[in-house]
Length: 312
Image (cartoon, helix red, strand yellow):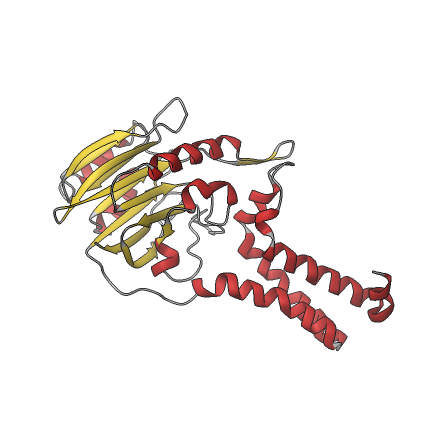
């Protein structure tokens, strides 16, 4: 450390240290501990945004006109590009055999009818909605009924489908009310197991930090249910209240792929709808081929809807 200060001066040494710390954050983020305030999961939720720190580091290094500091400042940028660069291009192959849509419609949504019309007009084949209140449920049923003859709903989560739903059942995720269920949808005569889930919310509290313990328990139980599913083709839709980078959602994310990562474009942030900073609304799958994925426009909810196309 003393050698660094002597060689580059105080400002050059500080620049080098900050660059190395940022590099380590990108490389070793999964090793950040959650023991204190669940700091690891909090950082991973907003990890792409740490890339903004690369720009001032590069400018600072350029002003120093020192080859070593410039190289060190470039390294975090290269790692960030390796991690997130593949998300940026459009990977869509166009429409697939069928299209699904997932949306958290917000329990305090002031105009559920408008949100329902947005969902209907997207013309997906299968629609999963979460955070539906008992007061708003009749509105969604009325607006979607004609286009989607097959339905299943449990608690605040629901599914509408143009294809027959042969069976549905709640999934126990360890809470007192139903926020997850499984349905078998017969798409072109082929059974697809579809899960609709709304994991428990997280909060950032001054005294407790990132409160995710309850959410993590629900994620573990949902992951166990999906792992035990006997069907080859499985889709999970809903609000997981976490990103694909969050290590504590590994019981789910390690066994399923993100439709957006496979066939979307950009980061696909979904929350909050006014200025999205994180993708917590997910469409995950296994045993299928994702051909397209998009984040749709605002509907009146505090989340943006997401949709994906699949080939069987």
